Amino acid sequence: MCAALDVLGLRSYHWNEVLSHKNNGHLQLWLKALQAKFDGLGEPLEGNDFDRMLWDYDSVSDEPCCHFVEELIAAYPSAKVVLTTRTPESWLRSYQNSILEVLSWRKSCALLSYFDRDFIAPWWALLNRSTLILSQGMPAYQATAHPALLESFERHTDHVRRVVPSQRLLEFNPSQGWEPLCAFLEVPVPEVEFPHLNEPKSLVKIRKDMYWERWALVIREGAKRWTLLALALVAGLWLASGAAVGKTAS
Image (cartoon, rainbow, N blue to C red; front, side):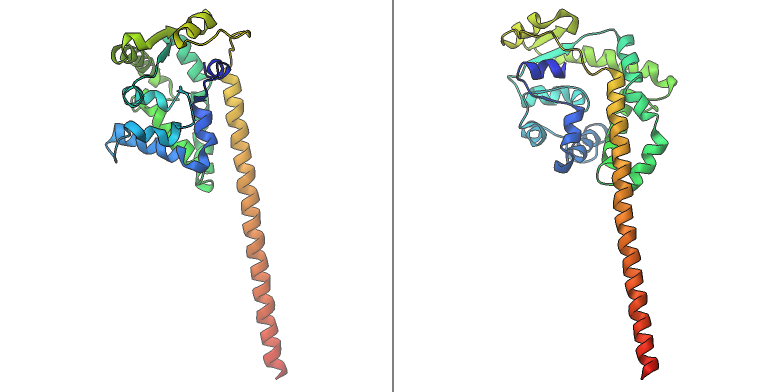
């Protein structure tokens, strides 16, 4: 869906955009927003607060934005809402083969988080907090959480239908192609096929590449620190030995 919106010239904010703004603190901002709404910690986001992350975008999708339906439609009262429809079972299969597979790396990601405090640690915290909402507090990667995940999917769909005014809502399946989407958004129909991206395997590959890139960075930074430490130690020993020789000569 994000790719389709991009084709239409509507820049979309989603998980990858959250990560691309790591230097702007988006990971931390969304984590605080989730904790405020669902844990009662801090002030919840409302109104212009969302502009801190979304000011340069035309649309939102995916986690963590999907947890803020009411807040977003209140913050942007003229915005239209596209509710993508699919069976709960097909959504769960996709989720299992993408996000839940990434969550299964919990031990190695927890270790990497210890060394990579600036990026992996806040990303891992946000990913886990977001999925715990959908799994209703159970470890989302475990099969015992599947009923809760399915219930959350259906509850989210019903919630969107209930809170979004009907004139601002389109229920849409990508198999319908461009026509209903473009008519609803009042934009021309592109002369290209409707994109079908975001396959679960490609998402997992992107996260694996990110994982190993961050380990490489940790190792490089660690090597620099150890090299500097070794040089400092050698310099200290040299100075100490030089002082000792001077005392002996005198």
